[in-house]
Amino acid sequence: MPAGGNVLFITLDQWRGDCLSSLGHPLLETPTLDALAARGVSFANHWANAAPCGPGRACLYTGTYQHRNRSILNGTPLDARFSNVALLARDAGFDPVLFGYTDTSVDPRTVEPGDPRLFSYEGVLPGFRAVVEDPWDKGSPAWGRWLAARGFDVPAEPRDLYQPLEGYPGAEEHGSTWAPARFPAELSQTAFVCQAVIEWLEQHADEPFFVHASFIRPHPPRRNPAGYHDLYDAEAVDGFAGCATPEAEASLHPLGATAMGIPGVGAPRDERERRQVRATYYGAQREVDDALAPLFAYLERSGLSASTLVVLTSDHGEMGGDHWLLEKLGFWDESYRVPLIVADPRPQAEPGRGGVVEAVTESVDVLPTICEFMGVDVPLQVDGWSLAPFVRGEPAPEHWRDTAHFEWSFSDPADLAAERSLGVPMSHCALAVSRGPRHKYVQFATDPHVFPPLLFDLAEDPEQTRNLLAEGGPGVSDAAWEAAQEMVQWQMRTAERTLSGSFLHPERGLVQRRDTWR
Image 1 (cartoon, rainbow, N blue to C red):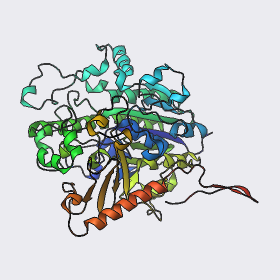
Image 2: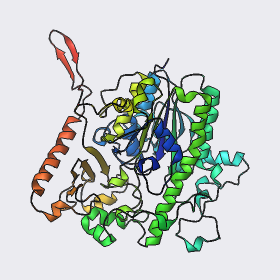
Image 3: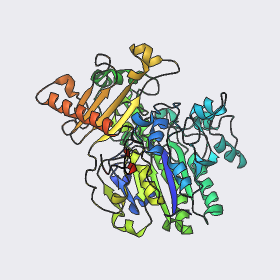
Image 4: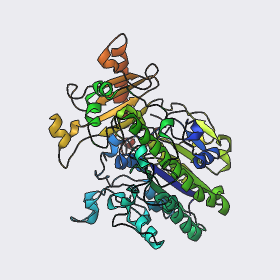
């Protein structure tokens, strides 16, 4: 029987960390998430460790950095030797269930040649029992069946319902993402998953449960149902981070110049269109926030909130037009800063309720936090640390990190597009970021003449528009050296440790030690 209580683990796909009204967003309103934050703890300086979806979730689900798990792309297999949040929940006595998807690529060594799972990166994380499996790359079929059961006319691929309503009045006067989608808000994907979770809880919540509700939105398509399509005016959108012109941004680094030329990744050059894309994103977030409200209302009404740990986060962020980019990629903060709210129902969490933590936290910390609640040992593989002290309202533990780390790969094993373009092998197509209290350092695996490193002064240049290594000047070499040293130390200290803390002693036999800080 599980020790701690129930777990509701929620992921919202592609949600920026600054997009919560409880953290002071100037335009977006998120009353549902604000209410969750009021009865839990918000982590305002929280970072995903990789992007895009599959790599971000590999770090989140296993508690390991990308240079450890090496699941570097959507489609890179996740090594079966790693435990994960679902397997650990199963070990704790739960039957962990999934509603949505996990973007997990199966380890090919664990299946037969020709297995269907080898033809999609949107597999189910080992350990989960999928109650609702709804992979986006297959058109969201479960959502389509739910719509059809309600008499809705569903196309062959339900995701085509995100096409705009033709001839919608006023569409010509706005940006291309303004016109509403072809489904009503009450039948959105988020509403579908929420209802499925509620119906399952109504039948099964008399036993301890571990539910992972994985929502696709506000991930693209960049279109919303009516009522949310025009909720935020493009003219009211706050300004964009980065250089004033795309040309200036492109001159900062060749990776940015390349990315801006990729369709769907480069942000619109037209200012009205760029602002509309951001306004549409805010509308998608508000639609998700509103659709989540019935789920949390059910937890309160049923009394389950008094025994349920709620953890809500995202796999990665969204550029949203900043630095003249969309999507999630590269070394830019907007792709990696994500929300994290932890609402612990236990009395010992009372001092922390409604608090906002400014300490640096990362996706790898989520797994050990859930382990602590479930009463199971944190696996030696885990790079992160439990956030329970923060949840209890305590100060940051001694030796807590002051630097965030994230990694990104742009290799292409299938077609070698980047490799051929740059004239480098796959192993060179990667970068790592060390984002410290003052400086942000970006190191590429390839040679500097291909992609040079970057150094930003976060105090003087928070929008990161000046690469100090290109400008030079007093103290730049010393700062870069210190940042590079920190990055090397981080990778050395988080190297494989499954057996490195074990020792075969001639008198005591097997001795096993675990670090208490890194």
